[in-house]
Image (cartoon, rainbow, N blue to C red; front, side, top):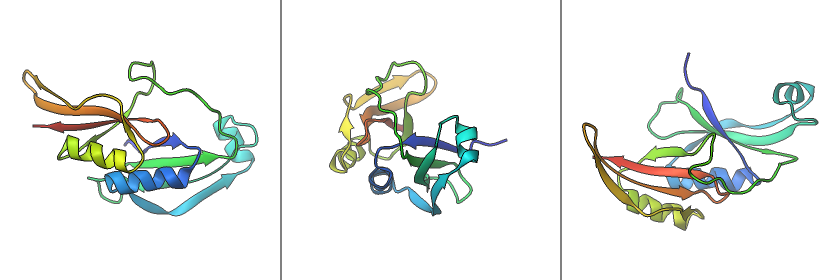
Length: 147
């Protein structure tokens, strides 16, 4: 058994994929997906399901590592922004060399900060520097560095 991917449903999959490619050095894995049909409707439980998107290779893994799957359905159900303490899936996290620098890259690429860059020593583990941010569609991201 192994972890396969994390999916983000987007209102503009190309823009969001570009954000993750330009901010986190993810790489597009061909082919781009364009899927529809009864099989997708049955598997997802979404009537008339049709989607487009791509898988992105995550940094720090080989070509067989887990991916970030960014899809855009023809019919996207809208929702409000998730707060960091909302029940359910919370955020994705990237281990980075310089949290402050990457936060600025993220902002320059269309994302936004949620919190402030913070350091904390955790007994027996080490010192973490981290901040929460959002991608251009509002999904939560944690930038972290363990020292």
